[in-house]
Every structure is written in C-alpha cells, then in structure tokens.
Length: 115
Image 1 (cartoon, one colour):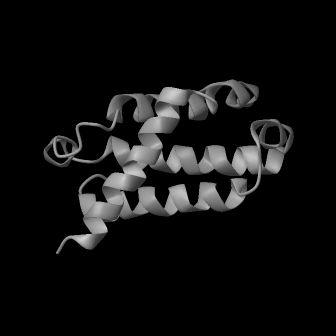
Image 2 (cartoon, rainbow, N blue to C red):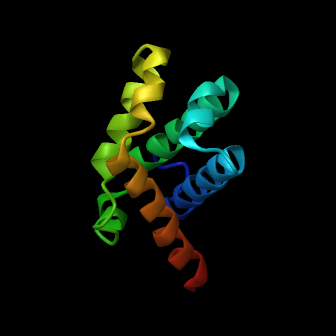
C-alpha cells in the first residue's frame, strides 16, 4: 500500500483515529478504561491504525514535526500487533507514546488549517 495514498491522507487517518479514541474514552478514568475490555481494545485498534499510518509517512513530512516521536509510535504499533493481547493494559498507559499521539493531533490540526 505504500505510495497509494499520500502523507496528507495518512495524517488525516491519524487524526480520525485520535478522535475515535477520544470518543471511546470520554468520561473514563484510567481504572474504568482498563476494566472495560471493549473500550480498551477499540482504543488499541485505533493506536494500531495510528502506528501503521505513521510508519508510511515520508521522512520529509516527519522532519516538519520533530516534536512527535515517530519511531516510538510505530514501535508501539508493532508491539500491540505482535505481542500477547493482555500486554495492552500495560502498553497503553505509556506516557511518552501517549504524549506523542496527542502532539500528532495538535500538529494535524495545524495542517488542516493551512492551505
């Protein structure tokens, strides 16, 4: 699929996935999030989508958003896809990767407003 869609579309996929996670987790605290397997695994699936899209973003585009930890986000996706699903509870609470995902939202918002 690499090359079929451009970076702008991939960034939009990332933003859509972030919005989905926000909808799933609205009003939830960490304890209720970890206890609700449907919320947890739906969020994990969106993180996988974010990681897959981030994996195919060109280096040129990544260099414009140096505050985003691209490698960590892609790495988390690989772990979530290939590790035992019960590890999701530990992995999804990683503050550094979470911070990077929310920074993607901020960066993506600025992309939408630019012409």
